[in-house]
Length: 128
Image (cartoon, rainbow, N blue to C red):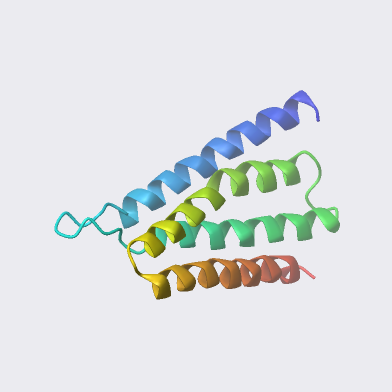
């Protein structure tokens, strides 16, 4: 990777991380003070689905040579990588299960997986 490519990945990664931070603040996953239970992890679902779409779109455009290196890597690894969060998804699922909310935990797993796969497929197919 060139120096320009590394710089672009860093800049796009910062933008993705800032967008994720904004989504977290928008949906505020803070625990309810009365029950100490976590709220539904909407921001994690939103950023994972959006990131799946973005990386699918970047892969599709890169395959058609309309998005040249290092831009496709900057969008996929930087923007989508900075935006999405596997670790928050898994921790939220474990927390839901620990709170004796097994249905919510399974729905969280299934929603992220199914919607993420669908968004990636849509991004890949959009420019065909």
